[in-house]
Amino acid sequence: MILAAVALATTVSQAFGRFTYAVLLTDIRTDHQLSNTVAGSFGSMNLAAYLAGSVVVTMIVGSLGLAAVARTALAVVTGGLLLLAWSPTPLATASGLLVTGVAAAGVWVTAPALATAELGAERRGTAIAVVTAGIGMGMVLASVLHNSIAWRAVYRVEAIIAVVAVILVASVLRRVPAPRAGRHGLQAIRTIEGWRPLLGVYGLFASAMALSITFLVALLEDDAGYSASRASFAFSMVGVGTICGGPLFGPLADWAGRRVAMATAMLLLAVSVLVAATGHRPGATIAAFGFGLAFTGGPVSVGARISDFVEGEHFGAAYGVATLAFGLGLTVGPQLGGLVSDWAGSFRPAFGVAAGMALLGAALVPSATRLAPGDAD
Image (cartoon, rainbow, N blue to C red; front, top):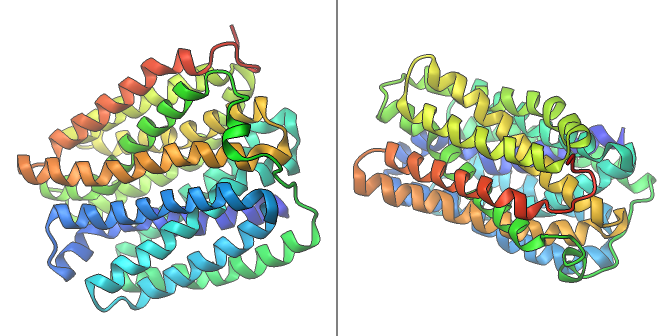
């Protein structure tokens, strides 16, 4: 029950609070009469808030405990979704994205540790994969809703689900003792061999991922001539890939090692982004599925790598620092993508930049996983 509650919380905070904006971007852009740069800035604002939230969580998780942080953060995300469901002006929309972004970090930083405590240390990769797969289900739902109702109504449905999640998580996590993080973030992360390149890999992965996921629908509609429904279907395949990526990358990280899983995720991301940029039918849709697989593989392999060196009760602090690098990458990606797209008059060059960042991250993987427990040599 704990695992299901944590997975649902992750769905609400990440899929609804952060990534739904990507599938609704063109509608919001048209409704509010925004440029690509400003629309990208809205996405970056959400992700910058996520970065700020990561800083706060890293500082407070040791004193409040993982469960308390998760419960509070999920409630705040729900408030942000309610604001987005109303959202009469661009300022209100930006404010809603700001609120959901800052609180989403509280759920994401704590979820892997809570899941690992439930399944046990020997299934670390699988535990993190389960909570990550919940993001994919939320992305699929957002895509399906986008095809039939207006963008504010999409957020209304998500807000209702979020209220249910708040009640479930408050009930389940209140009854079960949760692990507590005692070390400060930097103190915990420094115990990991190769922690600096590991943060670099995670940041580059996040930047490439955020750029691509934010503008995937816009690229397919504006550059490749996809209809709104066809582009939404392609985006939904990102969610399907994310769901399928859990059963793939979780066992892969546990069996073949963190290095293999991490490198596979980075290379798959680079290839998928390049193929999606062509707009080929059905190649771009298949690439969106591959992108979803990679979307799961990055957090699973990085989270499992951290858990190899840090005990469960300290995981939240260490993963909070990793999430800072992740959040920085998420902040840079959409803004960079919007700027490049407005300059070039096309989204394709921005996707080329994303692929380059993914390849650079892949090159750092050997340094990030040197002498790692759990790596297959």
